[in-house]
Length: 442
Image (cartoon, rainbow, N blue to C red):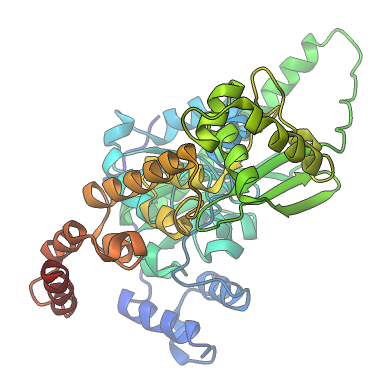
């Protein structure tokens, strides 16, 4: 039976929100002996201390660890993928988009794989980085229900200011780990996030019951599969030592940084401006480009492929010693494997509503000194998309942060919008008014 999230609120006594907030400030300041900390629930206090000793930032945005394409591939093979219909049926009552809660399913490392539920709440939670692909492990963002449930391997409820990260204080959550029904190893975590109603006793019992139901379903599915296996088990072939992931860093850099990950380790190499432009164009145009089109994107309209070919020879030679799996194929020119870019990560975060994380990840314009037409066009696409989302969807604090980066410092429209969103008595108003007046005079 599906949940109802408007009843059975948890009325058990506990420390007041103000006391918890003050205790949190003392903990962040390193005053671990402050008496107020003893009034915080031991589970929370101990998690805070682990977070503090692990140097977790109290306002740090979670890191995006699974980009869109990688996330989709990973989800398809994750053991919890087959249980998603059951989880939705148990935890999302009625219409999921109006359920008044968010459900999140993470892997054993704390990375969120599915985030679903109330549309309005998801648009709000995106600002704190609660989106698919981000890492919510305790050693990444501090105390939270999904991260702490994984750290303790038991169900956990975290209410409001009990979160270590200040950005999460408006939210409450309940989470339970899911174990492999045979090995008892933790496979992932199920979380519900929303208001105080999600930390009721009923909510905890329901999340626990959902985790147990998923474990039972996994066991039944395995038994059925074994019954239908008619041939001997063949162990999977070992992976080779080729590149398994490659990322091109182009934001705020004139010389792109290419990072490749193999079973033997990681390699990092800086690319020349021309090689960076070529690799970026091939990363954008994954289906390939003709020699004529790639030459135009890199050198300009009317450029001859004969100008491009010597550079491709040098690029291939360089990649032979650093990332042979990325050596471009010809006719058309294309990369044999997906090349991720940090710029595409920002666009993906903006699309998911994770505005704060996107702004944190935006380290500057795409290859700012490049004059390659294709790079200039992509640079403007990223810049314009960032600005459009900031002006149309971002919350006030994110908009103010945007106004501090180079792209937003002289954006009168953004400054005026932020001014209109500020409370009448905000001390920040005077500074914004002065900035707007200076820009209008120039």
